[in-house]
Image (cartoon, rainbow, N blue to C red):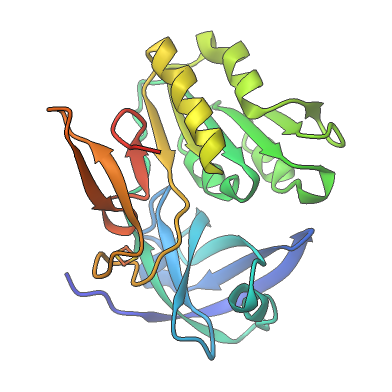
Length: 251
Ligand code: FES
């Protein structure tokens, strides 16, 4: 498959929480192809490596990318001005498979919350659980509320919402849902996978891994999976994921 980087025009790029930015980029041809759980691979001006950022929302003309400033690359990105153009390969990866006849719980932890907004929009009244370290990092609550979902907010220190982990809430509402989709730090995903396995609920996990090429041509994002015969194999998070069945992926 051939991947062409395209120019996306920046329509918005503003801080929404401590070190977290909300960017809208326009490219009608590509934005309308984006599915929940896919990602955009952005070439930061002046850098050679691209940065993968999960797609928070997409409409007929734009992609919404909510990202955390973690190093020099994302620092440069946070200073991009409205009207500038970015070189982005998108949409990439395999997203969530969301079935019409199932009730879902969408769970996001920290910067794993943004992709759950687009995913939760696929359902009428989804259950959404969001977790953050503290109140300064809380994002997207009004966006979720607009969509008529049953929204839970947790923080590790109790400075906003309930002092709890997302897994505490999940254990309480398990009877209300059929399947789980989640994105966030690996320990959180592991804990969610365990709860779902014990309750026999299907669970899809979006892995946040450091990526290089983003299209399956290097080994930077290798991850282990269990095959049905019990053996382990390696796949690429960028091309085979970033969304995996929790029963297959080795975390
Ligand atoms: Fe290169 Fe996945 S980032 S193979």
